[in-house]
Image 1 (tube, rainbow, N blue to C red):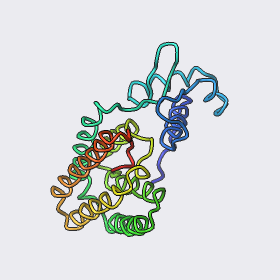
Image 2 (image 1 turned 60 degrees about the horizontal axis):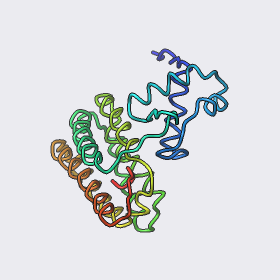
Image 3 (image 1 turned 45 degrees about the vertical axis):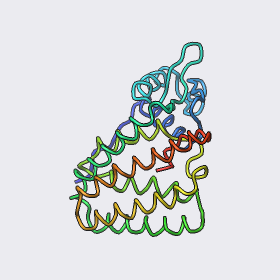
Image 4 (image 1 turned 90 degrees about the vertical axis):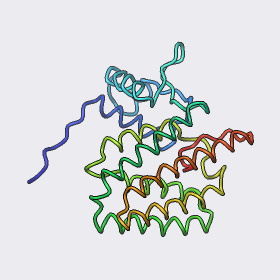
Length: 226
């Protein structure tokens, strides 16, 4: 049976546009998001854009500052530990809920992702590994049984996204890949509880790497580093 069409409001379209700017890194933490620029980009009035901005601010994507307006939000160092713990807990829950639904095609996609990641790490291709890292986590999380987990994780990653990532922490790429391989192996054995525990450890390792960068004076905040 054909699925009914999905109708998006103008506010929905504005939300997607702004989220796309943030996730693609076209805008960075602290950058302003103006209703005029979004209005010109989408060819719509500013009223639904203001509604979209209020909604995104309530979810942590944006901050509305007095005398400045809406700016892209970022997490300070004091917030990172809590966010990474949440990412680990929610990512673990996503695998426990969604793992039993992984079919042969999903497992093959995870294997292909890991294989491509090995090549990216060997060649030092930061851009490719960053993309593959995101894809790996989406393959684990985006299932019919874990859509709320997916939604929450996308929001949490937006809060920690965006300065230098693996480019500033090159050794973290190989560590991250080894952790991905261990998670993949547990999933292939259908040991979803073990995979969930490894995901929590994976997020903790990402936080530890960023903490060392802060101590070393690099001040790196990036979702790509896990």
